[in-house]
Length: 358
Image 1: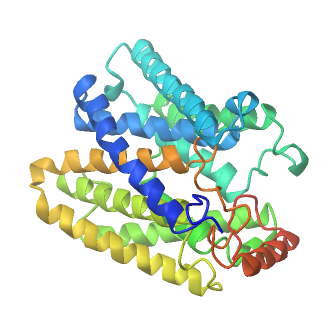
Image 2 (image 1 turned 135 degrees about the vertical axis):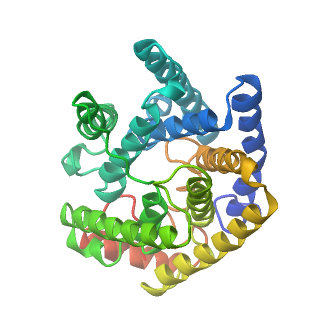
Image 3 (image 1 turned 135 degrees about the horizontal axis):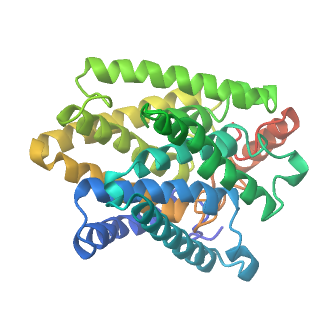
């Protein structure tokens, strides 16, 4: 075995985490210093980046750069530049249409709704909500259908139409995303993967909704509330972003190493408790180290790190997540035989595409 094989753990996780860390301050300089955006506006830009990641990255599966090259790094760089160009174009369109700065519009709510729509279609339903299985990988058809759904239809239904009627758009606190990682990554879809699609996707939605409501209640009792302005909301954002970042490192860069070969539900419980414990420590350090007036900067720093991690881990970009994952769904480099056996079993039972075996 090659000692320096970057597709195997834990080298892969260490390497890509270390690679992500310098990009975060680079994004800080780009948005905050070069473009002169404040912390809130810079965080909005990261939100729009994620709304396009689920489309240009995941939904299109690396297309169109995959038509030009099979090199992971070059394909990722091309798609990353394309994605950032679309973010810039979108911000410009919102500014032009509303004739005011983009941060004064509902672009943030639009971006959050687009992220939710992408996750529902691609993560919960394994790209089988809108497409039959035989067309799920046909590009650009598959990507275009998901793009229309995520960027236009669902935001129009949940945000723009209510706004035109004089009522506020539906806001869903994004603590739902780390809850999604619990269901779809740490538990690997267990036990709902056995249902097959679309039943499994509906069950995932129900589980994440219940988990989100429960966690919102916990955060409210702790004085960190997404529905209030000021310090409470900033603390809630820091906790949610920290848990998401810890989850990306653990599940997407380290492929749940060294727990990847544990059976379910033990692996899911261990991953959930482990990421929560790390999150709690990091959160306590951040809240204790920075004054209340600096919390908005902490939120943006968390978002910048989040986008840096996904820039390397994301499917369709550098795709560190799947590097080695295809051969070893249990953890990209550990327990190859057992992982392949589990992967074969789950495939026969109809696990949704993109959900780790285990």
